[in-house]
Image (cartoon, rainbow, N blue to C red; front, side):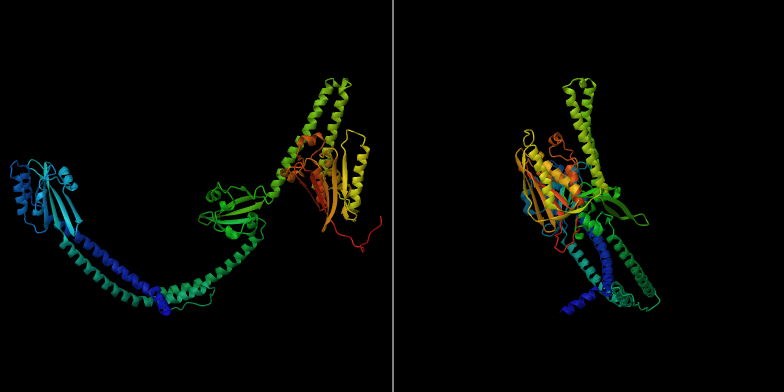
Length: 618
């Protein structure tokens, strides 16, 4: 059964059968068009002839019109007599209506009761009012023609005195038309079958060379260019076979060149540092390289055939406008997150030789660091200007006051000079900090590294802060604090620049003292974690809001600007500490919550020493 179904399917899909069917359908269509036209003309002629045959003669119409205008009492009887005496076998019903829409005479004896009643037929009323005849064919238990003609008096054609309604059966007319149509149909089928037989015979001679070319085309589609089409004759099909063999050779050559170009293009795209998106002329992505997928953080199947505006996350711009304008735009991926990326997108059109635009190419360049550096530079210039303006404004005010005579006042002059000296010292500290940061940024800050026991190194620094506490013990104005040590006894040898690392720890300890209340405890811990040693310094101060934790190591950033400036801070200490720790290949961060103090962590690389390690004695 399956084999038979396949055989039938192949037979009906063959060009032989298609030619036969096409020829048969063309012949059948031609006959049907001619037959339809002939039948239509015959139907129209038959209807017109039938319409003429049921037309009430003018003599009878004049008699009916005269009776309608007559004042005689037996006018209705005369009208009925005229109607009943009218002899036409095709007419089945006649109704005479005056110009007041009253039925005056009928041909059917069963409808005598309608005489004297008003007629409800709208067509009759239209004929009486307009004076135009109406002819229409209706289907009411058979085919009928309705003919409504106006009745006019002898005074003029526009003087309508009524109408005559004629109903006639058209059954015989339509039966004749159906018989003629059936005859045409049978003749058409016979002609189509004869045409199909002739088409099968002729098409076989044509399709044999075509079948061989079909097999060769399938071989070419599979990449086999070795076989050739056999040439049977020198006619058009033979010439087509030779052209097909030539085409096969050229396709093989073009395919090799295309594969080579495609491999070269794939290699270039895959090794580009920029992202590339190619679109069709509708703005839908058709080609994308791996770098663009990495930039956009998407998969290839999520991008292909999608509008490029949607892929780039541009909601208020259509892909067509984006391509046609060819404007360079900046796209932000994952904004306000840790993975935020800023991409510069430039567009160019792909044009054919004729100038037709077949698509576009979008090149994505990562400008995240460049943008951040530009923003950082702008912010840095703004912050430096702001930080220097405050002490300079203060200096100007005090110097102007002294210049105006305040230097003569022995009580005011020393205070003014003291403030001037403090502001000058703060600007000097700020400039020195800026110079330090500048040297670190340019990589010219020299690191004097040495192996140090971090446990002893931290203890040495904390001993200095304990000595300051003892020295200021009797001074009520100095803040009192306690340092709690949790350092352990294990020797942790790390390679550091002692001066710079002491500057980092001093800065964090001073901040802990500044922002902790009087009598608070500052806890210093030293722990080892795999290949890192972590120093933590915890205070009991006001803490840092969670939203500010990621910014406290930025230059000139202060959580409480007024309080920090009042205590002499430059806003650069933590930024310098971060640069120093990162120069040691370490990491610095903070953990805090408002009202519960803060903890700063310094993580440095650490490799445990074995007993076999050699040491140089100092």
